[in-house]
Image (cartoon, rainbow, N blue to C red; front, side):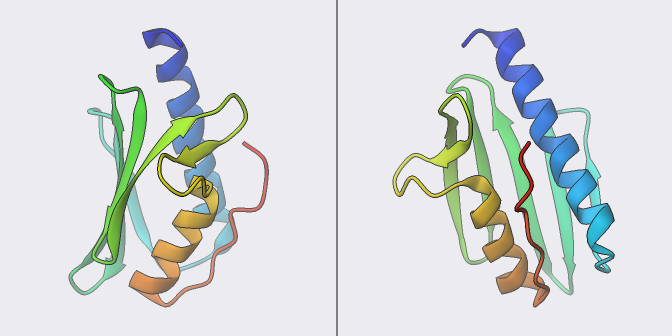
Length: 108
């Protein structure tokens, strides 16, 4: 994957996250910065950060409950250790950090 492909696929991910959070109706604040970082405020001191790591061509996601690295496999962003999808991980992070169940079950 070249740089422009990585940018396009990761932009698509951020758009997907935005659409899913908007459709959920959950009371979460979120913003995508110009630097390729997506932040979800979960209330109190909680925050979930999803950002692109250009050099490794990975998406990194972090919350108080942990951090994970995801690599594109041609269809999904998968955790580089467990193979879990970023969609499942985001659902788990939001439930853990905000106590809100959001399903990221739609395709990108």
